[in-house]
Length: 478
Image (tube, rainbow, N blue to C red; front, side, top):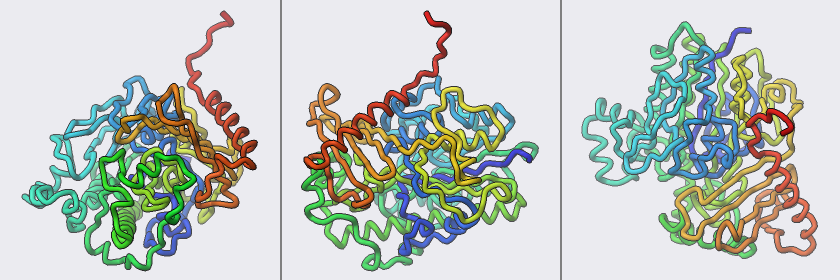
């Protein structure tokens, strides 16, 4: 079999259930649903951090955050880390990227520093808001719609989010992907092209034609009532009042009507991405590339979206924060329309793509290829758990917040660390996902759950030891 092309489609902040194929009848994602029907959907994929940069570094390196060292947004990845795209480029692939990357600090227009990433094509734009000399979206917008960016930025981020579709960041992503597929690739090589959308990241806004598709009053209500946070760690009550460590409005500062509008705008952003994915998939067909291309769709983490009376992201390890869509389509190799419910992780994606390409594995990678599981439904490397880490990783709290999650088939334990890592109280969360799939009842302090909690905490310690970086070879016994 010839080496496949690889098309990696990734959104930012898309919950696992913001997808029609995942059972959400209220959201319109016909093109992603088509992709799922033509491939394999992994129903329980978990990221290694609920925050962008640490999670994205885990995707690119197949390593846990405490090992790759990009522990928070605003931290640059070490040049010593090996990215899977560099491996593919060295093994004969033509590699490119469009959109967000976020393996380095990109605040206030700073140009994210590049390491050895293997990308011949690098059309970077961290976000649609902040001016930067290397923001390719802004260059494109100024060329095609002169003055539109200045007008929008003068009005604020809401005006940027709701630009007409033909000028929108997500549409630009689609345009650049299509240009690469039709004209920009090296046609003498297989390609790996990474398509990184910014949506459905906040701010919550979409072009009117997509927002008009939804009746806010008809959409699902957020999980949890006014008592939801009574049994949960105090940091969540802080986050309910003010999001992002107090830097952005919280759930409590919105009316019920405003929360419904946020949900509607979020769904509209997902539908906008879906439409662009549809154009990209149609281009693959038109170029005769579909049958020889492995297409993967996923997202870097989720979004609270009002669940548990919170918005956005942070130290929260609810499934809506750390469980993401994952779909793989490879005609003639992977089955069609099948769902795998084994627990898989984002560190497994790089080994999967490298195995598909017949390329060498990452020497320090910690994930396992999903190809066998996708093909046959059995997996020699099944762990039965997922690990996610947060180390004051988003907008920093002035008293740091550190949380670690172990998620098994039935149980989830989240340790909120105390001294000596921080002056915050040592506490946590424990959920019986069979009885409480929406994670509304925290069993952490329940006497009748104490033995279960201690067992899971001990298992978490064992998992942390098992996932240490011991890649430096031992040369002898002494």
